[in-house]
Image (cartoon, rainbow, N blue to C red; front, top):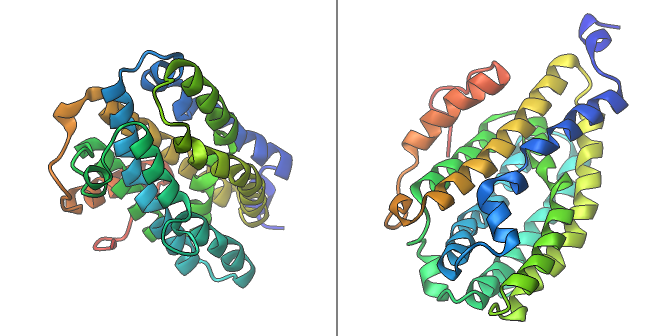
Length: 266
């Protein structure tokens, strides 16, 4: 047995370390607390939905990056299912389509969501950084970063109840996204945790996995920082991501102790 294996946490200890990051999830952010307590105005709620669209767009690409980086067919087969969940088997289906229905349900025009006019610079920066992380880090770290879904199902269920109570002006058709995503997230989170526990067996791999999940929590909270800041943080249309790539390289180095290779990216 190697020293690295000797120093590694047991499976139960490792799982507890990952669950221990629950307090860093974005549901405790001041904006989310207002969102669930009825304290957001309609423009603020619409701003959250419009900005979260940019994150939704990232998910298929980051999952494809994990698949491309993974040498294990059994993991690739498992992860490929997520591409269809988000993009749908055909136009008008899947997570992206459901999110556009939500956008219309809160009073946004579909065109203004698709052209990203409301996406804050900080949101774009954080999401591009997350995508770059999954493209350039080992596949196990990309999977570990997705473990925020361990914390999300109950939070999403609470969101639907809170919105129905406080924002009765929202078209009920918009809740389809959450109705579809909650059971998927419950199933996916259990499988994702198993993958991480199975394949991160050395102390170094486990530290990197914990750092990846912490990084993802920070990405989500940074998004809310930008949304909470308001319209002043909004960029006009899509922008380049060179600066985001450079910044996430520094963040990744700080989080994992391993520099992102120069020139790596999209």
